[in-house]
Image 1 (tube, rainbow, N blue to C red):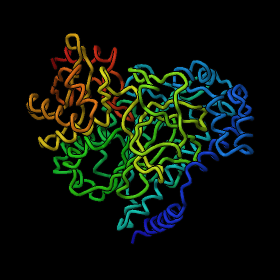
Image 2: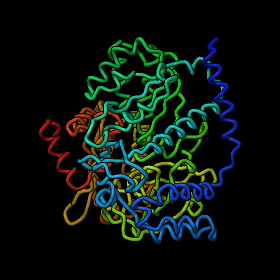
Image 3: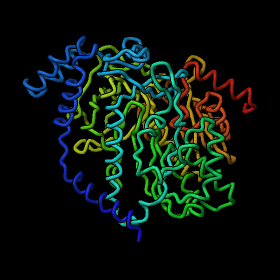
Image 4: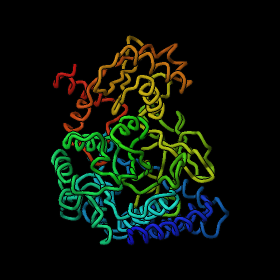
Length: 518
């Protein structure tokens, strides 16, 4: 009998029962969270400038919502460029007590999918501990999954991320978030952690995949965690190398896939063709700025925001009143607390955190699918939508259309991107779709247009007026991965941008021409 696995499973079940019995009062949890953040940071330069002491006093002694009204009135909204220019640049110089107490020793490099240069996201000790707590809660949620074998908890845990090797600078360390978190892995977990320290530290993505493939036969993997595109690429490589029918021929105990970063639905059909039996899928919302949400139970419609763990959430209605056509937030936007939102409406996220981010626009858009349980789905990025003439086409709309078309045609579309272009005096959309089998662009064009008309009323209206056409270019998947590699964005948390804007369109077109794809 798997004694260790049985003990772990029993502990997880007990922990799961305890957490499941807790009633969520999101407003109270968030009020308490912001109070703790304000208390910790009130003597920093940021806290003194924006009078955190007074806001904290309102939270403790004022009317129930007075603290939030005061917080909104006192502290401006920040995007990365603004907070870096005004505050975070000082952290890199080794200055202390700027936006969070003490000095920041670690910075996660994050470029997102639309920016060329790296962002330096501070990762404080408090944030590292908060991420650990959220990870433990997610593990405890496995107790809600029935009939998991005891020995599953003794199997390998493959985490496919960026390099765990950090760059030492004069005043700090920088690197991928997975590298920063790797130093925090508990000693008892290390025997289960794959691919192990040496391979995980490898910076060359192709070499890392090759080394994992060669070692795969010696591992007994039960859990896999990573971005769907890169996990699928790795499994395809392993299957091809060992001439297998599916991944379960080499990893028969693989049962759980924890994914995040992008919507999984467009990948699911192709992903499941690589399996010999079904997997349990667990969605995760982990960003360089914090561990924001995770799927709390089987078949949950969304991910539950972590409301009491060092992150205070605000929600900005994602509309023309608060954002311009480039997805940039306007001055003095409308912002809401969690108890003020509505299910089904799209919001951009602002977060204030124990890493010294304050009213920070993280760049993601979400919808609440269960307000009572604070459960959300990610719908896209503030800058990854198309509204050339009022069509308001979100990444969520695009994913749904691609998923429906893929199902109807029986094909797998791993990657795609859309560019808004001029078409005479009006407008058009140009879709670039990845498929390694021959497909008819005319058929795909008709089906995508039909599906978008069904899921987006604004799109349907504009297709009769200013949005005159859509164009389709079908490309092999290697074109998308090659462009990512040319940008140094292979692997880890990197994702191909679903929407091409501004200079990226020309850069993408140039790449396709130079590499013979057009």
